[in-house]
Length: 226
Image (cartoon, rainbow, N blue to C red; front, side, top):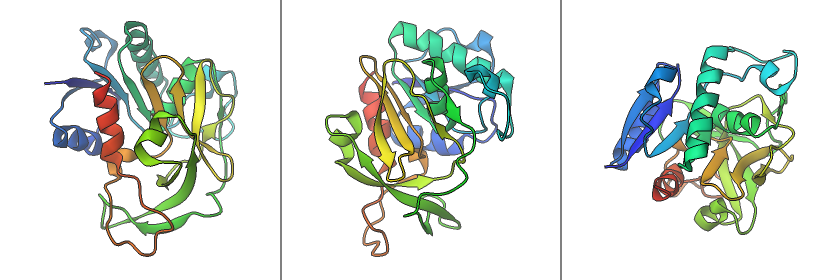
């Protein structure tokens, strides 16, 4: 059975572990550097808090809930898995860490939701509502092979990529220009701003401007790299 390392100091990772379990994949949760070895088949960097601005050469002006210990742990994991050529998936903050590791930077606060954002019921959190918005996907990218060139995704972030890191390409963006996904030009490394672990398809959802992303497809792609 394939095994994925989830590196995070967050306590509640159930949405990620539930998705992996549903896809018949095992996982281990890494909370300290000593536990990084031996490497698993792939690395998942989950969403959580903001990244420490000093890591990308800025002072803190609006970043929240910082944890340098977690940032350094995740960057160490990224370095090890990247050099080993193992698949890496970054989600939310995880995408930000990938960009920082590649020499990129962040906009610490974007201050708004995309103009086309709508609030509808979350597929996996039916008791609550999330914001969803349209995005465009680059032709020839990993995501385009899964979803086509237009996709409705969830939005729960106040930061965004600014300078894109070395050998990363932005392959998905909101219509206000906010980067929604990056992929590495030669390695199996993918980062998304949205949260596929919370997305399953909703049938006959007439108030959606386009079909919601099926997040399991992205996880299946990640696991297919192994």
